[in-house]
Length: 105
Image (cartoon, rainbow, N blue to C red; front, side, top):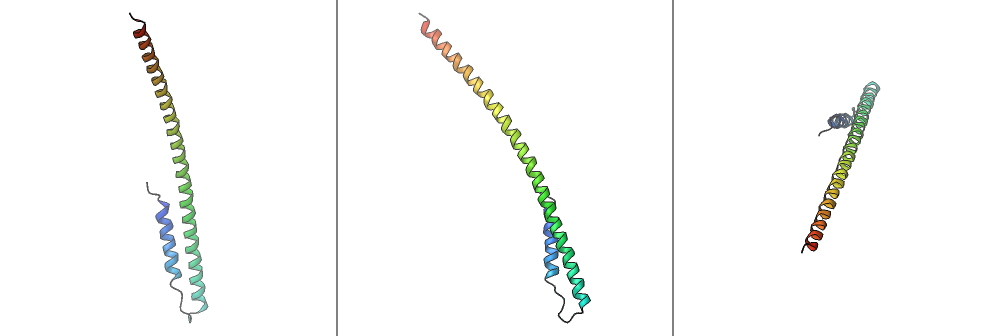
């Protein structure tokens, strides 16, 4: 199962990294630097939001998995208890058969 938010978080992080790697020239006007900084801030927020969404989805799926594993554990315990009962019944039958064989002339 692939988590859908993961590619979004990765893409948002790559977009931020790409933008941050393209600093405006040092001789650019203040407006260009401010625009670059604003865009970097937007991309950083998008990356943080996507990472948070991924974390939420991971947590939700982890809870589902834990619930499923707990259900499987309960079923396995019930199965094991049933098997123990069968084994006890078979052993009791074997003991009765031995007693019958020992008491036969």
